[in-house]
Structures are given as C-alpha cells and as structure tokens.
Length: 160
Image (cartoon, rainbow, N blue to C red; front, side, top):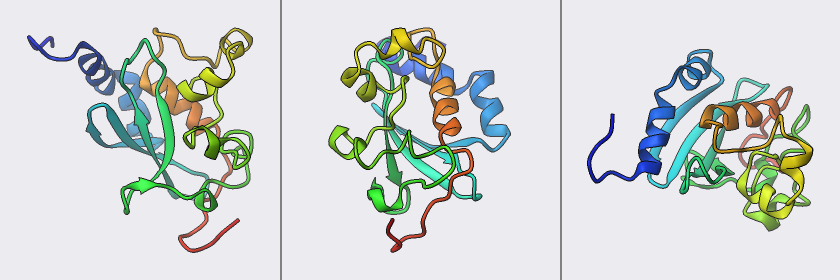
C-alpha cells in the first residue's frame, strides 16, 4: 500500500517483509524480524546449534543498494564482538575475523553492500549469489543462513 509522502525505499522494504518468501523463512524458523528503525533492520537468523545470530542491517537505498549487515548483540543492542561470531560449519568464509572487522563487520557475501564495494567484480563472477535490485531481503537472509549451516555461537565470555 502506497502512503503519500512516505519514503519509497522504506515502503519497498516493508512490502518485502510482508511477502511470501520472507514469511515462509520466518514460519520455518530460519529467521525472525526483531525490529525496523529506519534505515536499520534488525533480525535474528537461526544457527546450527539452535541459537540465533543477531544482524543489524543497513537498508537505506533498498533495493537498489544491497543490504549491509553486521553481527549484532540483540541483548546489548550493539555490535557483536568478533570472538562471539559464528564458528565452524560453513561460517569461516562468511564471518571472517581477518577481513570483516576492517570492513564494518560485514559478512563476506556477494549480496552484502560492503563486500560488493570492496570486490567490484564479485557480482559478475557470482551472479547466482550477488545482489541486484530484483532481489529481496529474504534472499539476503537466505544467503546469510547458508553461511550459518553447521555453525555454533560461542556463549558470552568465551573467545575463539
């Protein structure tokens, strides 16, 4: 529904948050919406050990600009320290302590704005996993979830 004077980027995102693909992922327990404080979206994505990884995602410019995520401490409402990032399983190439901290804690994915900015040819090299304006937030979350297969989250106070 179009609201006169409303931000079209926000309206597009809100529409996608109500779409079948987002709802299907939420219904299956893959992710849940924590909140939207425009232009920041906060979600929790299921991990391999039954825990959830919080993500704070910049969504300004959506969907023309790719989302820009970072692991987020949902209880403390702040960036999740690298020692509490996902470990094992499919996570090492996605949640990289050697790359992500110097790049806004971004996941190393072809659908993330920060990763795409630092790897200009990535979208052409990985078109099936890259962001483009026809993608939705559910696509982004599906790619993050793919990177969380078989992972564990260290409990608070436990380092790498």
